[in-house]
Length: 108
Image (cartoon, rainbow, N blue to C red; front, side, top):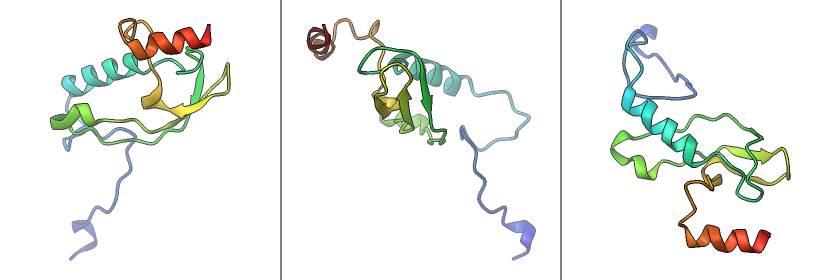
């Protein structure tokens, strides 16, 4: 095998699908990630939007979107809580969630 026959490993922060770099962004992927970020934007402890995070790319299988979990570690800049990106939440989307209501009662 020639050296050029094996491209080796390529790390990319977000792997969408194997395609040419000149192809337009995948709309289905972009829509899913926008929705995912909206659902997981607040600290689960204090609800803050301010955080620092690691930056590891996790592969999204478009056939199993419900199994996707962003496991980057976040640190809330307001309360110091450490959690994964997937553990972050959006209180506006969780208003009807009993678990969220119980947590809200505890924090008040």
